[in-house]
Length: 436
Ligand code: GLY
Ligand code: MN
Ligand code: MN
Image (cartoon, rainbow, N blue to C red):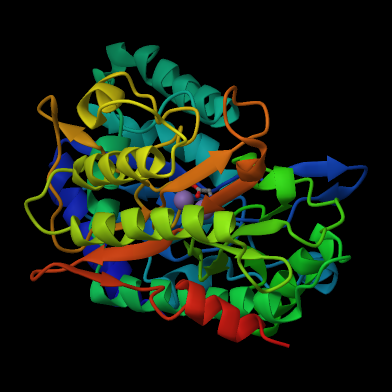
């Protein structure tokens, strides 16, 4: 659990960054209609959550440096006995102040009328224009309202500055408390992957494995996955973001599961691949061990000072050499790398930042250079080889073998920690788990 004092520290840091003449504004995520009266399960906007820990919709946070009545304002829903009987408790303004440490809290219905006075006299508005059209309009109306009143001495802001770069740079570096929450997301994910491996057998449907994953997630306190689980067997292992999960698993298929729990809004993102019948064939083993070699070497390449591209370079080299050794690619290593001959088999990058979002925020390049790893960054390392049957010139015995192995890695002072290291991934460990 992340303490309220940590959210306060983040707000203070952001206030320092925007300076005394700015003001920051972030709306909560809107509720999203699904069909009829039903809405999708509510998920707070990650930026908003990062600054507040507040999970209700219909809320807006304003950070107004040096404002004498208080710098942290939360506009949120009022307590409403009738609504709370239907939808559950609300913090209200009292809760916003007492539990979420707002300096002042106001009913969300008062935001529109209060915005002009809050913005007047501020030089810059720190806000991500274009992401929430409804809120953009509300904000621009408030600015126009001030412009119309300049003869009475009001000063309208002269700049909109995207809040994302500074906020996302903060989010890129995880605190010890965040890493502990992410470890919990990964630990729940471990239970889910183990369960799927243990119960898998030919003849099951992909969604039946998905059901095992979801059971383990929810049973262990993660109500939702961090993204739609990918459960593909046979040819479906070669579809990178396969989510139909509705085919029957055959004897001799590989099964690829890319699934991670979301815990306290933090994501795990783990992939394991295994043979449906619990024993790797010679071809499956050869491809699997090649991906595993590449993955382990890539994880070792993650360390402070190494460039973001270091793991990818290691993967490309090992996979290309491996495909040559297996006779799937023909030619000289350097030429084949130069020509990207690996691309039909490995067409994605080595991974991404991980945090509140599964593809988390943070720049990958700074000053036109791939950025170096620094302690506190969390990323995935997830090479794969996907031998789709329609790649020309590949002997049939390799067809429909898709393998991805994905772990979650924290950069430390000394190197790296692998949060998901306990989830079985060697051939021996997987076969031992699957032994009936
Ligand atoms: N689960 C999506 C990804 O691995 O990036
Ligand atoms: Mn994944
Ligand atoms: Mn991933």
